[in-house]
Length: 169
Image (cartoon, rainbow, N blue to C red; front, top):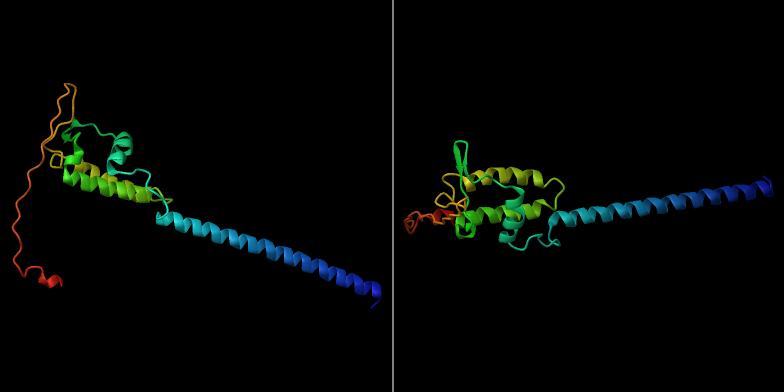
């Protein structure tokens, strides 16, 4: 082997080494980017760092739910839909709407989170607005401007016997 051939071989080897080092650096940067993107997706999925978009259930109901999912209140075909402008006075409604709000806040942070949330909404709205729902004794303001709110009577309940719940311990 001549000196020129030996020098050419070292130059080719150095060039290959430089190409491999550049490829390793490119792959390392790509791996780092994938790790960063994955960490961001995990963080976004938690929702721990994300403040709620709406600060109260009232804000969510009045700003998002009612305008986005309006329902015809009153006679609709053979069904009567009920709403109460003082919805916040109905404990059952507040409980159901708060659960929907919490679920919505979590669902909005997930790529396909709205799909199961919409199924839950489709389940809850007929319960809320139904003839035997929490607003059954109320009437929303109509064309004549009349508005009626009547709280539903509480159902009676007897306390359980002293040892009734002991199986739970």
